[in-house]
Image 1 (cartoon, rainbow, N blue to C red):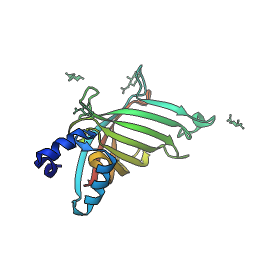
Image 2: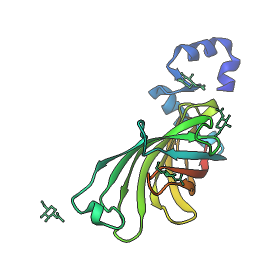
Image 3: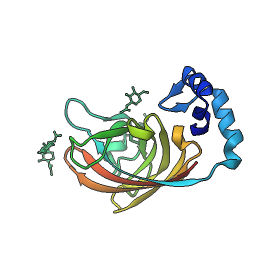
Amino acid sequence: MGMVCAILLLCSMVIAMPIVRGIDESPQAVAKWFEDLPQMKEKVTKLHFYFHEQVSGKNPTAVKVAYTNTTFQSPTFFGLVVVIDDALTVGPEPNSTIIGRAQGMYESADLVDPVAEMSLSFVFTTGAYNGSTLSLLGRNAVLHTYREMPIVGGSGVFRLARGIATAKTYWFNATTGDAIVEYNVVVLHY
Ligand SMILES: *[C@@H]1O[C@H](CO)[C@@H](O)[C@H](O)[C@H]1NC(C)=O
Ligand SMILES: *[C@@H]1O[C@H](CO)[C@@H](O)[C@H](O)[C@H]1NC(C)=O
Ligand SMILES: *[C@@H]1O[C@H](CO)[C@@H](O)[C@H](O)[C@H]1NC(C)=O
Ligand SMILES: *[C@@H]1O[C@H](CO)[C@@H](O)[C@H](O)[C@H]1NC(C)=O
């Protein structure tokens, strides 16, 4: 982009195209990005944020959408499906600055251990990552101190990302199910 914008004329052409948050998301630009891939260098980006799961109250960000007739007799709520749109913040405080959302779902998919099988997007809404996403797909054994889950892809600045998300519970209310979870994410991308 820097080189393109060095030429004023081209730069104004680029601006006229459907650029979203600094990244041209047109199919032509995506195709060009792949053509340029052999010249691009992979880099490591580390992210740190807190994930706020609000189950209780008037405005929950996590809702049960499906279960079966044995779910609530199961020690692990086996079969429960939850859809989330949880806030991601800089710090652990509930009023900390929001930098994105975790949007997707998880299922209780282990008969013995409490496990959330997660499939979601981290959708960033500020700064250089605004509009970019990371896709997480993995097993969250919620009682473990550290839960390592694969980052399997991304969009925007995170095109072709892969990496690891490490979750650690910061705070949990067993009565309501509300939780604050610390995430460290390390990704390789271009
Ligand atoms: C759950 O539903 C199935 C199918 O309707 C039924 O056969 C089964 O007896 C039910 N189990 C319980 C624990 O209610
Ligand atoms: C966040 O909440 C704390 C108390 O929990 C308060 O001291 C602080 O001023 C609040 N910050 C903002 C930006 O509202
Ligand atoms: C993020 O991008 C959206 C849509 O392009 C824009 O409306 C918003 O102002 C941006 N937010 C920040 C904090 O840059
Ligand atoms: C958990 O939530 C319940 C119900 O709102 C509340 O009474 C209790 O104080 C909370 N516990 C903690 C540790 O925050």
